[in-house]
View (cartoon, rainbow, N blue to C red):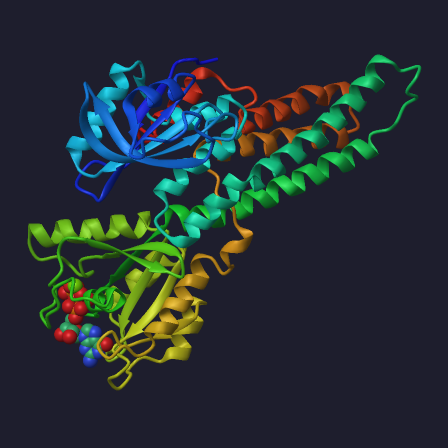
Length: 453
Ligand SMILES: Nc1nc2c(ncn2[C@@H]2O[C@H](COP(=O)(O)OP(=O)(O)OP(=O)(O)O)[C@@H](O)[C@H]2O)c(=O)[nH]1
Ligand SMILES: [Mg+2]
């Protein structure tokens, strides 16, 4: 157990109204008593937990800064240790001076994520919750924040805990049957199979929800592709509601790929405008077209733009063929002009619906956004969770091992052949909650935090 006292500036560097210095550990109250002078002379020496005092940080009888200090005594604090937060004037100088004094009085500078690590080591939160703290800080949209808050509250921890309970129950019954066959006459495999199938079902559902959650937190990339001059850059500008990309009537205006991010009902969507598809003229355009193709392969979804005011060309059909196997929306642009494309025939040919818009007048834009959202997700955020990569891998392991155990029993093999699978499931679940997790893993997780968190 760590016993020293740590200290860090918890607010970001730079100029701001206030800066917050955080302390945690056994020496906190001593340090505060030595460096803090209350503004009111008659303040009692006993400082009740969760109260704020106004006064000064003093060094060699000199006032260093005017501050508000909050004290939170163990175990009712973030780390479950004694804690103090000193709110001093913003900017670099005051906060650094106060920190220097805390260090001089015996505190040590905290490493990244060390406060949260102590909260984890002292059992206040499990690893799933500790990692949600990082996600909260990194959230880019309100939905991402709300998913991370669900995790911090312990929703995901409870799910994993119930998985573990189920698995431990199955395993212990199986082991009892194997070790004491006299007391447990052959129970058959059916009830164990039922238990494992139910576990597999829940774990698979969690994986599906996590796929949705990932989109809300990490966002998706949508590439705008199409022949030259169909209005790709105009669409980027229309979606951004800002003149971001150059638009001209000259085919081949866009050469490099441009990206900007919008928020679509809580999903961060990075839109990539690409060079128009045609037999490229010159080296630079050729590079642009190659890049466009790369984006078409890399993006989670493609918006294929066609010019509705002209008959389809060979390039259009090439693109349609290229994109068939991917997730895409077919967008007919320039629908403010007389339409020269047979929509029914096209829609039958691609077996996909069309959206008609005008990037110029804004016609159909709302529908396009709605359809894009449906394509990306189709479900509200409430039934999604967020799992980071480490957790996704452990969940995959749980699903894989459970599937294997089920197939062993379905083949009519003996119970002893599934105990290893079940043990691996339990180990993965313990890795998720952090009950058994190697120090290197913890170091890696907490090193991604900022100092002071
Ligand atoms: N009438 C009409 N004109 C449009 C519409 N969208 C774009 N245009 C015009 O079509 C021309 C080409 O638009 P861009 O947005 O530059 O087309 P692009 O697909 O980015 O072209 P490249 O970058 O050359 O591949 C411009 O003159 C636009 O004003 C539309 O919805 N209706
Ligand atoms: Mg363009």
